[in-house]
Length: 59
Image (cartoon, rainbow, N blue to C red; front, side, top):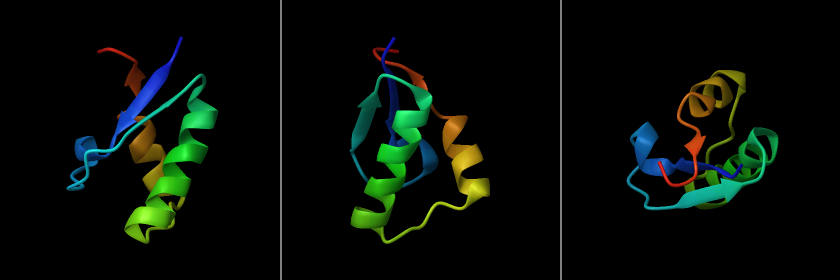
């Protein structure tokens, strides 16, 4: 099952949708995007919050 994360779901003015096969891969990809495009390092609190916004692809 593919999972996805939308930057907009956490209040960021960004239309990026990141998809991966697992939640672990998704968190890594989201963290890389946050660092590269938004200048944000995800700490454990931000990772925990981002995980609450992960959904199955197509929802």
